[in-house]
Length: 196
Image (cartoon, rainbow, N blue to C red; front, side, top):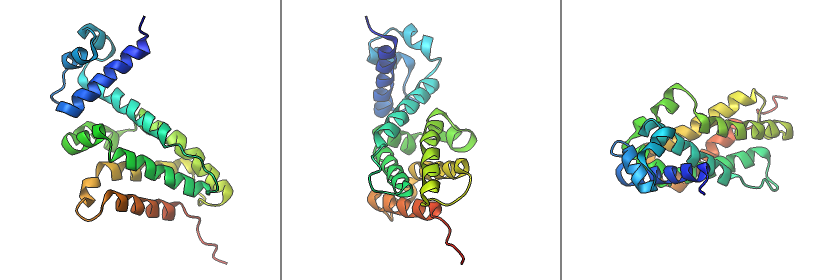
């Protein structure tokens, strides 16, 4: 017997394939059901429309990317570790077929989460960022300040870089862009110089 989780993952895999092939606007719940090998009511019971299905897909994909981006700290400071992980997430996202398809062709899908409110995947990212910032404040590698504020601003910078990367495509390779991101975050999080 197939578990509910397996059915849901199969449906999310199917919508990912449809969106990568045809885009969000041209994907229907019927297409998704057919590709997933389930009945239309099975899809409709869980998701009322393609928009909610794509939102759950994006959340799943971002959670996977965040989990995969976890790297051992090793001898690095907490700031160096956070910056390396952020660059890793950005590097994955700017090469990810689903995200590049949406950013390049249907960016309005992301507008709510870019301009109006945070979504589940953004809160998941903040849950990873905030303790890293707190650890950096303890080891002295990250400046003082409210960790929640610092984490939110790091999230916004990373998110905007991913969604706006085409604005730098004519002047910077992806590798150069990631190097600039590391410089930006390193400087932003650096402790202030002691004025003495």
